[in-house]
Amino acid sequence: MHFESIFFEDYTLEDKRTTLGRTITETDFVVHAGHTGDFFPHHMDAEWCKTQPFGQRIAHGTMIFAIGIGLTASVINPEAFSKGYDRLRFVKPVFIGDTIHAEVTISEKSDAKKPEFGTVVEHVEIINQHGEVVLVADHILLAKRKEATT
Image (cartoon, rainbow, N blue to C red):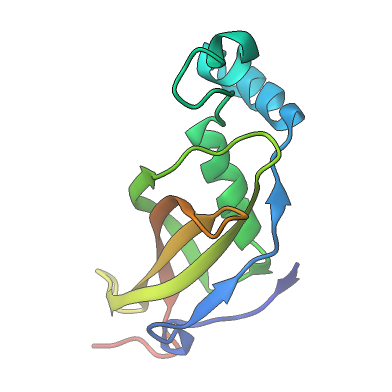
């Protein structure tokens, strides 16, 4: 992890980056359930899950979002900050032992309300070891301009 100043003008539409992978463990399930209070049997009861369509425990969607987005945080950009996420979808289940990585594509750029900033949208796809998209979201950034527009 390192600091790198990336201004609004430096973002290029369709630029793409891919993160390293991260294998999901049972410990992740237990820690996330403890943090959130979500002890639903879909995540925690292996025997009950054997009777369900997926046949095994499925990861909390919020956990995959947190871990997947965490994978994208390899550069600290002091010139931008996150406004949040839009269009978050849990596309496919993730299981213990699956390895996920993130692919981030700059999908939109536009003016912001304040002329010294621009809005950048990063389309994020979380992908499993089979190449299947398991989660998608749009990350909205507010990035400083090198020079404010008038």
